[in-house]
Length: 492
Image (cartoon, rainbow, N blue to C red):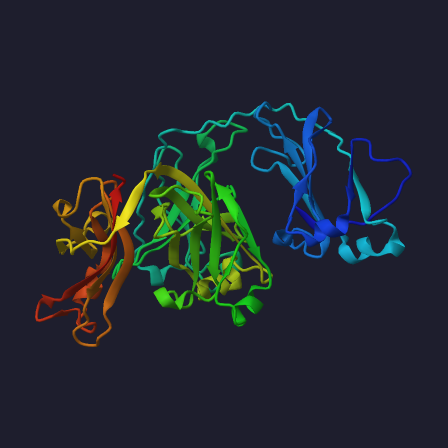
């Protein structure tokens, strides 16, 4: 997207493809309308739409300017081509964020706004329509290749670069620069995933999702990032002058509402972390489901969501979490990530996340299940609960952590009902009083697991480390608190 101000030049002939007249512009600019669009128009054999931001598109540094986006529409009938301008299936909009500044535009002496009326126009000339045909074949059941590379005697490595053995049908290799390369040289290790270019046909491209992980062999707190080229499909949020924001008194701020899966969402950002849930010195994010008042009683919306950060050096979008499943309902409309990325890693220029004091975040929200069942909320007696402990871990915690859950007896409340409860699970530090605590509001329902907790509650190495005091005289103390908020019953 172009972001620089455009140099205006004049001519007598009107634009040949589309004219757009706006009357009462001052009323429009003072309204709550952020953007509006023209009718569709034809140019060069394609259909187009002109989007106008009367006070500028602030998401791309267009504040106090008039911004324009030219969108290619009705693309479903187009072949799978590499389209030109660069219009293509993942980018159908070209934007000019700073077409003309509002002071110049609004001044009567300049003649652009006359009797509170203005006229805009556009010409679109298709110079080249490439005839290269390409097909994108999505793999319904993609193969996932795993490889663990154990690097021995790391401190003795002297070469600039090392390669792992190849793995998978595309002959993947892990590349390691023990002293870093390019922006990371001398201050970081650099790791890449490389593949043999001889393993797939000429002039073809391979679209993959990768995960690179450095394992914490003591505490199990691995460093993991997932990277991809394609931007998040639902929302992008750009922050400029981040250092000024982080030094201000602003604790949190939110994005504009955006649509995904037929619902409205809002992204909340804590630039120095949410201290209330152990997010200090991290970037914290909340994804909120908004405009829920129109939803029927007893609504639930289950989503897969993923949060991304753009790395300018690698030109990729990264996420440090797998896709997160979350069940939204009337008593919990916010999903929280308290520790998305630590501020030191984020702020270091060599890492590429904060570039020229600017950063870009994105989010994808896929609705996988939504139910509209009538119901009522009733207070209830205490249910039967018990703590479930896996001393050697469960699922991804197996062999590296203890797993702890709070279980609720299914027989203790009526069929097809749901119990909404706030739980706290705690492993006590019997020496220093620095307990490990997990807190969550949870809806116990037949569609959910009746046990809530964490599979990687506490790493086994940390548990057995005597300086922490979690295991004293071979005794572990686990506490649980459950605050009953109510029972959701089917409507009678």
